[in-house]
Length: 125
Image (cartoon, rainbow, N blue to C red; front, side, top):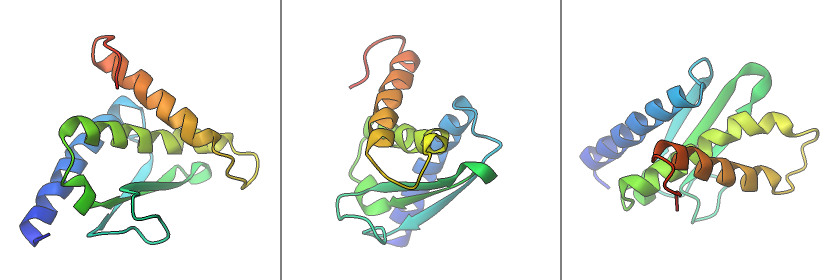
C-alpha cells in the first residue's frame, strides 16, 4: 500500500468513525486511532480492527489494519466500526479481567441493532 492509498483509507475510516462516535454518544471519550499497514501487533492475521479501552478514564484505542480495510465496501467498514465502538461502552461490564466472549457477542448484537435503526428498520446483515 502506497502512502496515498494509506491516507485515503485513514480518511475513510475517520469520516465514518466520527459519524458513529457522535451517534453513539462517545464524543467525550478520548479515542485514539492507530494505523497499521498489515497485521496488528498481538492480533491474528484476520483481525482488521481491535479496540482496547479504559472506561474509568473514558479512553479507547482502536487499531486498524488499513490493508484489510482497503478491500472492504462502505457497508462492511461501517459494520466493523460500529462493532468496535461498542467495546468502550461494554467494557465496563467486566467485573474481572477474564475474557469469556460475552463482550464480543453483545458488541455484534448491538452493532446489528444500531444499523437496523439507522437503515429505517431494514434488518442489518
